[in-house]
Length: 154
Image 1 (cartoon, rainbow, N blue to C red):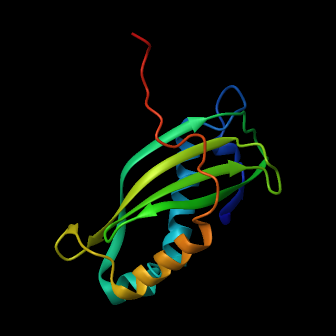
Image 2 (image 1 turned 180 degrees about the vertical axis):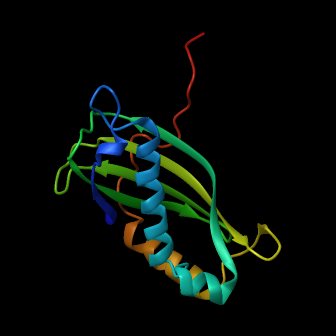
Image 3 (image 1 turned 60 degrees about the horizontal axis):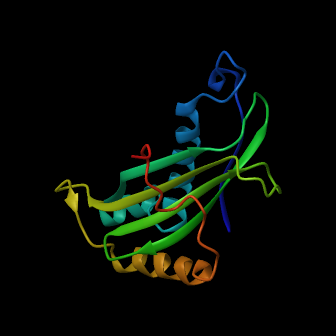
């Protein structure tokens, strides 16, 4: 699994229960997506060269265990699938070196041409890095919190 982000939980991220606030789980996962972009050639230089960036189309968050002030956490990212314009990813939040999944985020990201503001195919350099990462991770088990539906039983 690819570790994309590591941080300690800051005081301003903690709620009245002493737990990480809901919104800050997404902030941590957002930083992990930024690191994934860097890995795939969409860092600042890559965005300037290609004129492309990634937008998040959809995000599902699962809060699975308490995360508290000062705790150090890391995000491990898996590229589940891709096509010529999109990435389907999973971020898992863990204690460094730990195996207990603290939170999970399934996301769909879209490659965007910044000049037009519309979706565009990945350029060849980025697509090669996407495919290489996919090949590295293709045999990893599918995370449990992927493709879940929210709702109440009828």
